[in-house]
Image (cartoon, rainbow, N blue to C red; front, top):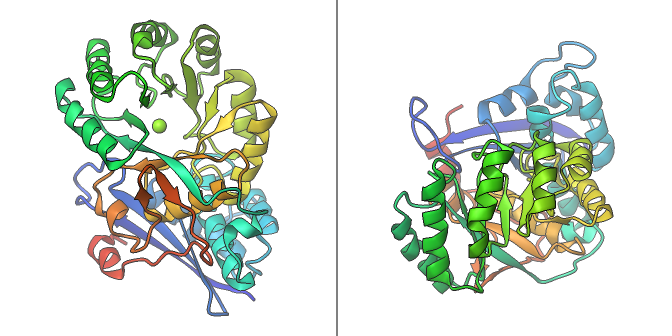
Length: 372
Ligand code: MG
């Protein structure tokens, strides 16, 4: 079997001249073979940048476009192809967007392998530890603290036993942050599992330290990305003073960055995104590293049903993979792009015993939002 083509599709809900928020654009990769198998992957990154990294013509030894490296290759040789892409794009890739693009391709290759061997991806990964995964819902908070009560109430009523919020105005103003957390905690009750995501917007250790203290009465389960993941010294200092768990890592790629983050930042949780960190292959290595450090891995995930399907397969085959992020985005790229995405039901996402990612893309949604 040989790879014959790689198609990169970029999607966007708002027009190009308008700002896009999380979940409103996407890049999908289709790896096409000379058999009937087509693998699907995605990267939650800047779509046009990912398209360029894959489609770029070769420049020099370490600046190959990824597609040029893969045409004619056997798609079943997933790790060798990962290493080939990493080596041969390392001036332009090696971290950041280069690994994001490789992540999409890696997911597509696992999709193909599962179709070829006719067993689920979780079987190829070593076996299924669970039939369902507890899901926590992630929402972007409303600007007025009190308006978040109805959002939280509705999600609790849908069956969520764990919620997280972040983005929007969270992190812009200390008092507003406290007021939003207070309102939501009041609504959910003292024992409900609740976490917040600052998307690095507290910026400095001193501000984060103050906010950890001010928020401690609200018994948050974790505080995510109080500062940028590069600021590992601040992470480490926060880890040592805080009773609340410290989480981060969605912006990091490869086992190398996670090794440094685990060692230097000492978080309680790491959150690699399977569509950014290097795909299913690299996620497994990161999970092993996290386990060696006694750190739980809870993947980041806030994009389309492709990401969701890949994350479900990975977690199903991971010993401690018992918590998944479940986006509450209303973007059609989350709600409608994948016709049969894994569904949330009464607190859990069911692990499908499907072949491949088991997803069907809605071609009408693709045509409606395609920009390339
Ligand atoms: Mg986050």
